[in-house]
Image (cartoon, rainbow, N blue to C red; front, side, top):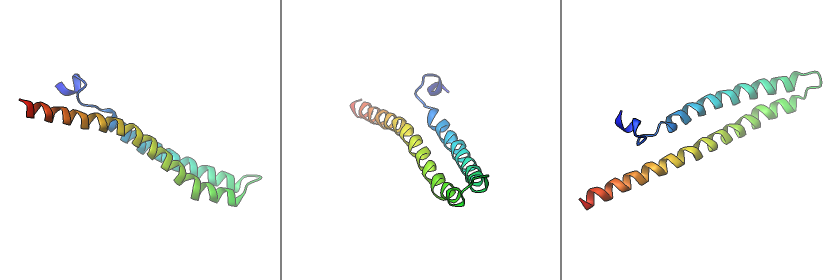
Length: 93
């Protein structure tokens, strides 16, 4: 609890993982709904609907994943630098 209160332990990486899952679900549902509407609309295009489902969803999932990874990398760098600092301190003492 002390590490949490002194900001030595970061909680954002856990939150980012939850955000990734939520955004992934939103992308899949929105992509399926958008593809369905595009394929069956008044001036709909079956090809466009299939394209949204087969290409759009994976591309947006990749974008969401990259965005989340970029944020987590910052915190991983911080953790690694903290480990290096602690290792150097223990060797010096």
